[in-house]
Image 1 (cartoon, rainbow, N blue to C red):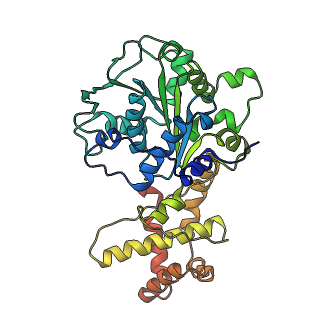
Image 2: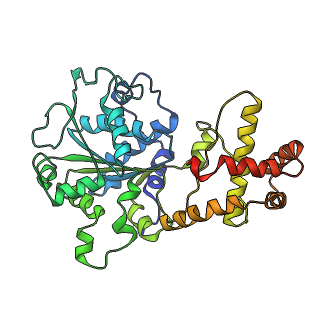
Length: 371
């Protein structure tokens, strides 16, 4: 069994000098404010090389995953692929995401030409013919010459397929039309892959089953998945996506490219409360530095656990610990050995050797009533 990822297979083609070229109509139909980065052009070329290579496709239905870091421009890839697939005869495109607020932002980017983040050129065209971009509720009466975009959430898609109502999507939309399915942050649909169902009923009621069902409804349907956080350590997920990850551009590569802001990663073997206290001290340090420069800027801290129950438990424990915080606990952070933390502690000691002022400030800044 081949244990190489799909993008590694395409890399072989690239090294041999046979990578597909980027069609001119892709950048031409993107917003004038978008200048494709080198890795974005490469992502397009990887996809096109795979889509048009029968030896790689092996007669499989087109299903790929773009594993790309947050901020690297996944929506630009989506927009460009819409025009590539339009040129291949596709007219119907279904976007589905996990959260409603993300869905609204996506619609803004794809539909509102007055938005600063609008993805398309003012007058899209292909080979001299104008292309209209239309929002639709389903594909029953879609424009045969335009790009028809339908937006929904994964949950709503699942409900529509199982409890149909007037004007909603039905399985017939995907049987009677060839549709491009575009899943943003697609790790949210992998409920079935990560935890295999114990019963057939549970399997058929999963969101992932619904997506798989509409994808398989027509041999010409295409599934494009995009995520920054594929859980490839999970053996079931890795097995599923081994032959589907067409482009791999994780955070490490994104940082190395110089396109993203650099950041510091502070690691320690301290317990949860001490790690939180480190974050509080550094946040307060930044707050004071901004104030010293006459800037009213308040840093933000995000405390995240693996499970929601863990987050709730720590939330309940946080405020009592903060109320009983002692200067000695902050002094103990001296042993962590981090240079930035040491600088912050020295800064506060210059203001108050006892660090009691810092204790008071932390209690006030992070009091529960401020939430």
